[in-house]
Image (tube, rainbow, N blue to C red):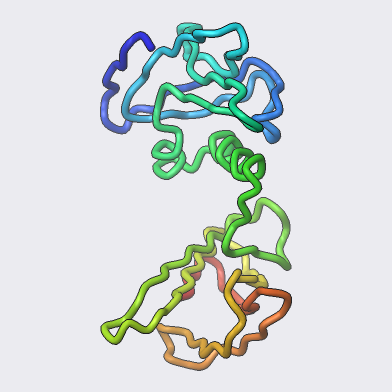
Length: 193
């Protein structure tokens, strides 16, 4: 570690991927990721550490090192914040690749639409004042096209009451193979809660 440098609020920090690597299953050399908030040059301290990405000045930005049965990955910036703010495709691919590598499944799977379609599902889970659990699905159609996706939500088997919170109308659901399944026809740019 050579010390972090603050970066202007809202500025993006480009990182160029330098090699193919098992920890980067969705990226290739030359792909650019975006970081945010700070830039910290990293230093490989052992021969087993591998530089996977560099900042614009060529200094190490992402390092991977074998650890146990997996890998420790260090990034010299806030990749997830930059992805949240900018929605950069390559940064998203980097983060998604790490979840695949770790065997993490998303809590909501979207089917029935083309891969890469900009439909964003989000879950909010909590408990009401009586301590009863609830789950709210937010779905955002960021496209200018109508869509009719199928949502598969990983939940324990139970009888679920589902409703559209905006119209207060009941939404049909099925429970199949560990998934609560909902379907919705979206207008362009529609949000569903």
